[in-house]
Image (cartoon, rainbow, N blue to C red; front, side, top):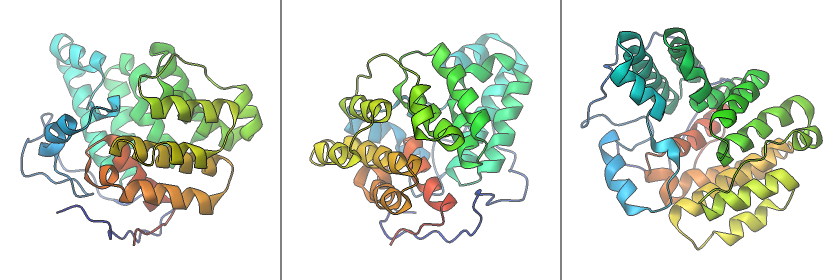
Length: 267
């Protein structure tokens, strides 16, 4: 299905339980062709889009580096754990957030070492309003990767829902310097407070990926402050942007999942 800016979501469920049926028996190795994800970009396009944009998030990677190594050396359980991560990511992209958690938790059951790397699980927990568990997941991840700006921000987002913005900022996880200019700026406004409109303006004429990330995190910043109209404006803009509508970046799918969970439509 070709990507379009007139995609419309009409799910009434606030926690995104879009599928009550069991997930299909996906292969541990996803097919390279003829599989279109729910939001209009086929898996086979990942490589071509990566080559077109020099500013990429690590969230394009289907599994953690540790998971890949374990799949090669850790025997059947580790390979099954990696397969469960893939299934969970695919279900999340399709909007089945609850189904994705089932798979991510199965990953931990199969290989407990993976828990400290499952940033995908933290994102799903956020959209299921399981904020305490989400914050714990992101703190575990940052302990393993102390330079991950996005996981620091997502921990803040979870804790803002639990304790309010001021306390979440006092608890903020400081990390190293992100190589992406847009994420360096996003990190600072979450850490210190700031104007998300300036973030978007600063990258409105930059790379497509930078505008997408600026809009997404501006919207998330507003959500942490319970400003739903402003959050809606920027996250829908992220979805409609060229990068948001065409990229196979996991965060592009997340922006659309966000709209489903908030019952927002793209028109």
